[in-house]
Structure formats: structure tokens, C-alpha cells
Image 1 (spheres, rainbow over the protein chains, first blue to last red):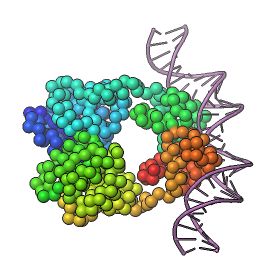
Image 2 (cartoon, protein in one colour; image 1 turned 30 degrees about the vertical axis):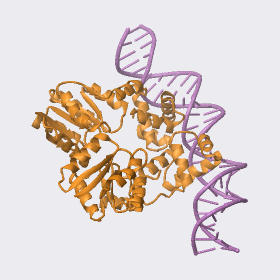
Image 3 (cartoon, rainbow over the protein chains, first blue to last red; image 1 turned 120 degrees about the horizontal axis):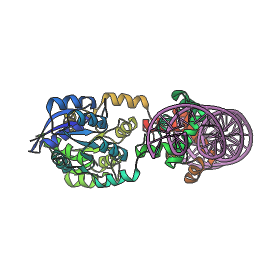
Image 4 (tube, helix red, strand yellow; image 1 turned 45 degrees about the vertical axis):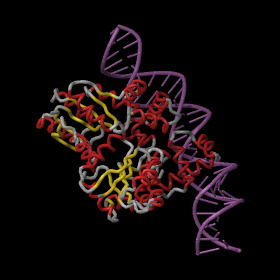
Length: 201
Length: 201
DNA sequence: ACCCCATTGTGACGAATGTCACGGTCGAGA
DNA sequence: TCTCGACCGTGACATTCGTCACAATGGGGT
């Protein structure tokens, strides 16, 4: 019997996923949560074989939860579930020893099969997504450039960005100029869109 | 027996929703689809009592599908499912005679209950979301202003927008200026963000 | 010790942007 | 018919933005 923990914030979806896995005779759902910061506690208490984590959880995101989970409960295999195919998420997931990475638009049978495969230590990663991740690569932005882009995303003006980040407004313009060049955008809006789509923010 | 049609593009979620509803003894899933433009054909063929439509479907969005469905198969009640709580979606849903509007982070029991209630002609709408929708209201933007904002969202420059919309670049600047003022933004980025969050694009 | 790069800043320049005033056409309603 | 608002445009203006050259500091590697 494979013991499964599920963390997914949308109640309806979580209930539906539990219903899906409950039909499988060789697995049982031993914990279901809606917050990332409850994952560790629940895993210690219920000792699941596999943790199915949504990326986008309140409290603590799924990948951070995966990181602490891997350290504290190393024999629990982790399978990450995500709606968007953001390449950077996969890269980060691999760094924190996630064994499986499944998109929500994968066929329904994939989840149960994925749970079985990560339970025996195999990796389960969509080849298309992996290729996309390798192609997109890591962020070309320095931490500060990413900060400035994130601030610009809010729609605030250059010198408001400067004030919130304690920079000169000229410096902010320089960082934005660098960021625009690096990501290949035409202006800050383009750069924000490109960086967000690639998951670099 | 309540006959249910389900349209949801993410396979895994769709399978899970089917699993959830299949546990209910008083309903059966007679059709499951992943495209909006297949809804009408499937509804005519399977004659469901209730159609559960995701908003965000490929081919034809859920609300457009709801519209044609209401005209062609009027005794099929429609329940819309959405992940984001964009007020404008609810407003449009009400216009096309949708009976129910459920968020994906509602409790799992809500869906089956919602299906039962719309099946007997009741309305099922989250009161919080309704309040938010009435508060946000309809878009203050004229169609053309919305066009220009949508184009600006792509990150292209003002005169590229002008070329794609066959306008003078000065006119584009005027529309953007109007839009920025109307939505209460500080610049075009702010206006794009505000309008997108409100669902006005 | 040296180099590389992130970080932060200045000054300057042209281009893009945001705002305003103004005028015209056209279709929908009062 | 007349008015109103959406639509489209011009011209002008100040401001912001994007880019460049240049310089100083400081942490990490080789």
C-alpha cells in the first residue's frame, strides 16, 4: 500500500484528486492539506511514501516545502503538480530533489502511475517540459535586476522604484536597461512579460 | 438521475472531477470534453441536465460555449467553474444565463451540491464573489481603449500598436492616456495591471 | 595579487511617453 | 432634429524612459 500525502490549495481540486487516487487499490491518501507550511508536520505525523505537492500553495510554496521535506523526511518521495509549465520551476524542482513533475493537463491516469513510479524511486518528468526548461535555461538577470523588474511589474514609476529599493533613479534606469537588453525585450513592458513567462521573476 | 456534462481542459483535473461526481449516487457523467467548441455537439448528443464548464477552454471559452448552449439546448442548466475570481467573468456569465458559478477553491462538496441545485433551477453563486463583481463593476474602457491596452500588454511600442490597429501613433497615445486616467493608473504598465486584474481585457 | 562581475552612482542625449487643447465624422437615442 | 459619446486625428509641451560612457567599491575565484 502506497501512503500518499496531498497538498493542493483549491479545495475542489484537492477533493477531486483524492477521489481519483482513492479509486486506486494500491494506494491510500493519508493526509490532505491546503497550505505549504503544514506539509512537514503532516509528513512527520503520517509518514507518507509519496508527497504530491502543488507548486502554488499559500504559506510556503510547494518547492520550498519539498526542500525541507527532503531534508527532514528523506524517504518520502516528492511529486510536484503544476498548472503552468514554467521552465524555471522545473529547474528549481530538480535542485531540491523532486522525483516527479506532472502538469495538470496530463492524462488522468498519469497521476496514479506517477505516484507508483516515484514510490519505487524512479523519476517522472514530462520530456517536452524538460526540453523546454533546458532551452529556456536559468535567469540571465542578476538578483538586483530581477528586483527592479519585479518592482516595475507593479506599475510604479522609476523613482518610486528607486525609493522602495533605496537606489538612485538613474541606477534604476540602468538596471532596467540591462534587464531589457538581457532578456531581449523592446521596453520594460516587454521585458516584464518575457521574464514573467520564463519564470525569472 | 442527473445527467452531467463536464468540460475542463486540464486532463488530470477533469479526470479528478469525474471521479468526484461519480461517487455521487444521484448523478452520472454522460460526457467529458477538453474543448469549448465540442460542447454543443456533445450536449445535443447526450442531452445532459447540467453542463459544468470551465471558463478557460481551448477552441471556445466556457462563457461563449454557455451562450450557444443556452440557445440551442435551453433545458440544460449551466454551471461555470473558474480558478481565478475575475469579477467581469461573473458579470458576463450572468448575461448568458449561467445558473451557477463556482470557484475551484470552494469546498469539494460544493460542486455536487451545486450540480443538484442548478439541476432544479436554483442559482448557485458565491456571495463574496458577487459582491466583488458588483463593486468592481463593468469596464470603464471603450472598446478601442481596451484594444490599445491589450496591444500595449504585448510590450510593443506605441507606433507598432498604431500600425497593428491602423491608427495614428498620436491617437494611440491619446487612448492610452484616457485608459490610464479611467482605471486610475500611474502609467501604462499600471493601467495594464489594473485592467487585467479586473478582467477588463 | 589579480581579474571578473555585481552593485551603485553621475551626466548627458535622443526617443518615447503622458497630457492637454482642439477639431472633425458618425451612429444611437431623446 | 439635435445631442451625446465613441472614434480618429493634429500639434505642442513637459516628463519619463532607454541608452551610453564612465567611475568607484567590494566580494569571489584563479
